[in-house]
Length: 333
Image 1: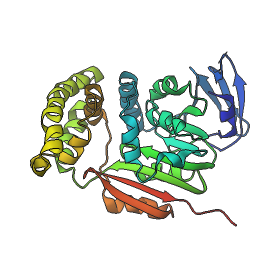
Image 2: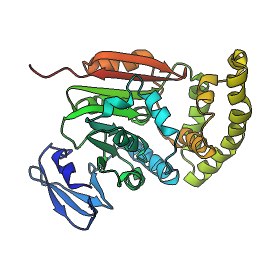
Image 3: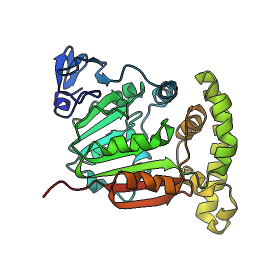
């Protein structure tokens, strides 16, 4: 961790002031040591450059999800060139220029792909939190960036002060035991007038997943040894990649009048330009997660309403998911 992260950290349990006890230092990074809370006396370790500000216990559901995604992002840790366009599509209508000079929070950073992009877009500082061991991959992918910070933390107990001008959570909230509570927790870390964006799986447009894939995932593939689930994902990803390259991509580009005949076209065409390894990772993602909710538009709208956000925009993405953004109330004049 970089020393200036201390300006933003707070105890996740009592919001108290944390005191740094630094150990080994490599360049700008404090690689080990501890963070001690002056109020509740809790001590949080810094391990391999990442502060580990986790509560003592998690629900079994949270632990299983953290283990699944920790495995995924440490085995699919590479960053790809396609991520920028995909990220901007997920947070649309927010553009690259919006990040410039802002304090940014990534709620569920995985392997750090969006932290790296937000930092490159010119954010003043980007803090990425994740509950899983994926933080080690995230730290490795971003430690060279002077404005990037990675924290292992629970999204329900974010160990940061409410100072952020922008927060986003991409593909994370629907894997939480209580997605709405995770969203509201991030909203509470916004500064007055700060903006939040979120992207979630849609209930609408995903009948075949909710009725066919999800029962298989919850009953079988999420319970198998990870290597076995990875092998199943590989067996699915090989023919899927062939269909994407030989059918979905050429039909949409050369014979668009026929695209309506293709199953799940909007989404599958959107990933047809991705590498095999990226799509393999996506298939694995859908098979390994113990928890996945598919959120209806009315429910998603309720999150923004409960958070009392203004300027709300919610749009349909690829006919299978929802993306939304809204602004926290401004502070007193």
